[in-house]
Amino acid sequence: MRDYLNFYIDGTWVGPVTPQPFEVINPATESVAGRINLGSAGDVDKAVAAAKRAFASFSSTSRADRIELLQNIIAEYKRRYADIAAAITEEMGAPAWLAQQAQAGSALAHLKTGVEVLKNYPFDEVRGTTLITQEPIGVCALITPWNWPVNQIACKVVPALAAGCTMVLKPSEIAPFSAYIWTEVLHAAGVPAGVFNLVNGDGPTVGVALSSHPDVDMVSFTGSTRAGIEVARNAAPTVKRVAQELGGKSPNIILEDADLEAAVTSGVLQMMNNSGQSCNAPSRMLVPAARMDEAKAIARNAAESVTVGRPDGNATIGPVISETQWNKIQGLIQSGIDEGATLVVGGPGRPEGLDRGYYVKPTVFADVTPGMAIARDEIFGPVLAMMSYDGEEQAIELANDTIYGLAAYVQGEADHARAVARKIRAGRVHLNGSGGDMAAPFGGYKQSGNGREWGDHGFREFLETKAVLGWEAAQQAAE
Image (cartoon, rainbow, N blue to C red; front, side):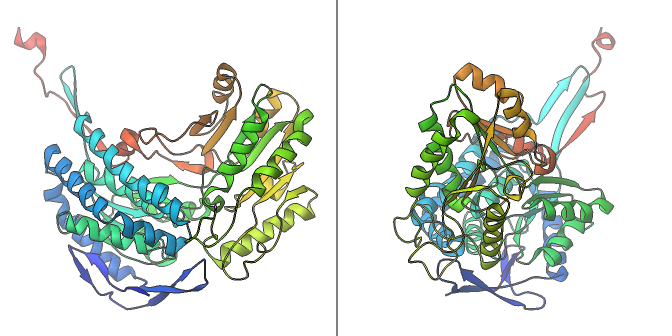
């Protein structure tokens, strides 16, 4: 069992002001995997003070210094790679293959991308006689979720370090193990004392203390839209910057000219990945009405190919994160049945043979209408809603008929798909099964958040812009 009872503040591990033990549950077994302490406002005060003290010197470091620091982190991260992957599997149930290939790998990719961006990032620009310079914003509060735990830590910490900021991280209290190993990586890599700090805790206590703290200059939050609203509300009195990556209900438009077999199959498999616990998952599949019956059969076959099992085996997906989440998903599956959607495959309850652990059957509904809960709510489980459309304009209307706008997917002839993509109100649109791009901005429209992460766009969130007038002498004056 893992015991991570201390916090990392000012370059050392320290006990909490008031110990509050909290058990971390392994979702595959429902047994206790480890213990942490939940922090308090007093712990936040100590961590923020350390970050504030460190800011003066760290914000003055050179580009070369920060590149060297990130390269040191990369080297140490590679050394601890297997430890991080194992921690992710234990804390949130990702299959070992997914934790190794994608979950842990994503953080390494953010580190490498950060180095490349930092090498050439244009912090200074002279326009006429004015210098426009971008400077580190200050002390940053980083609040991260459990579904891609180290990925979300890296995509905040890397640009914050690269920009010259100092920070306090609050990882998810229900999946904190990989955050501790990440912290050990940074310590071993030589991150100066006070630059990076970690305090565990829940949202109502540590999250509120961080987002409302007068000495925190910026909050970067990833989580639910409901929680994001609270973060913004708590941050408002101190007028700090708030960057948010929130929920999603992403459409997957399969156009008339798409390869239906390939498009439906890939859409189902992508939806089920990570047990459906990705904010950008293609959770609404929009299919031409005349081809819905054909699409149902393809979707059934694809979903039945998704195996569910213990994360230490070869299953496609493992459990969802917690009993609370399992119950929420079960309620939404039942609502789909009650509201009259066609259950193509899956349904309520655990998969056969899995009586312990928070496992969910890969579930596909068809004939879903816009007013149904499964069409509107972010389920965050392996549940796909298939909806029919008559004509391209209705497909676009249905795609945009959501409070969210994080991602979208369009499949069809290339030029056709590009034209439709321009009409979708979402921060990212994937065409014809395109993979990821670590340099592309990640973030959403509408209630999917504010700001962008990843690549050079991620840097901008951690920088303030200053104009210095008269930096260059006017040409006329010189003459």
